[in-house]
Amino acid sequence: MKLTKGDIVLFQGDSITDGNRGRSEDPNHILGHGYACMVSARLGADYVTEKPVFVNRGVSGDNLIGMYARWQDDTIGVKPTILNILIGGNDMGWTRTATPSKFFERMYRLLLEDTLELLPGVRIILCEPFFLPLPETRIEQAAKVERVCAHLIELQQIVRRLAKEFQLTFVPFQDMFDSLARQVDSAYLVWDGVHPTMVGHEFMTRRWLETVE
Image (cartoon, rainbow, N blue to C red; front, side, top):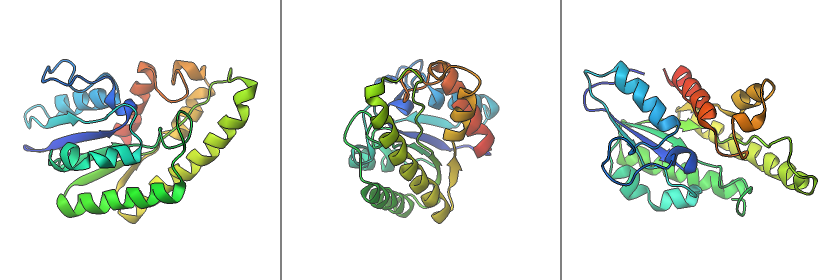
């Protein structure tokens, strides 16, 4: 990725992107404390003379429809030249009712079509939602874990398919976390199966940069 003067890089998504970001203009916290902040710091340093602007509009708890509901203000209104989307963690059915796959695909496609029409020339990056169940998951939850993982695979396939259809960059995370989990305890990477630790965010940052750049 080559950034130029005037570039606005926007990160959109749920709590993984939100990263407990500040809601004021305080530059110490405005980008949160996760991969969005880490990616921004590295790109900002690499292109310091171009002074690109980095914006985080992730909202904790959002599923796809929740994100779409605020799309006009939090995305179109920001007018990004580069848009990163990571959504699906609240659609797979782990913490709330799962979003049906057909509805997820229909809404995601509509979101992309609207964005490309209203922001001609924007570069869009689609990130793969992921899940890393902890080995100590209670037996009574085993069936739920299996169901959630099966549905997540469907959502992941949708995001990958849309990236190919719209010729967008696709950042895969699931295989990375699966591989890392064979080397170290899952909780060291994703403490509750959904939310990465700082180590997990660092690996996300590395994967994002190596894929996008």
